[in-house]
Length: 113
Image (cartoon, rainbow, N blue to C red; front, side, top):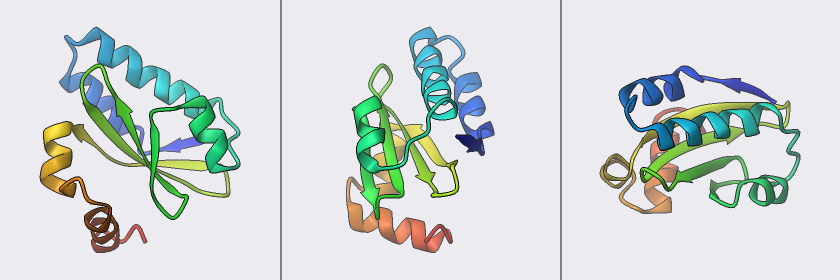
């Protein structure tokens, strides 16, 4: 699978350079996505139980527990995965208010849907 906007994750790694567990977990997520051939939501959640579908079977949050980091990714039928957003749990609560309707509005306001 082709990963687009990987720079967002690279920035997250650089920002948390001293946190080796987080760095390792994010690199593992990148590897899992790039080496995958996921075709259904079930394929994603079987390989990555930390994935939570938040909109339409296309957008997933990955909860990197070692640092309470969340990464929002869009999966497309053409085999591309796009990093949409990444941040810590406080950033997530501030941006998305722990609410799927707010997530949907944010995706719409930012022209993702």
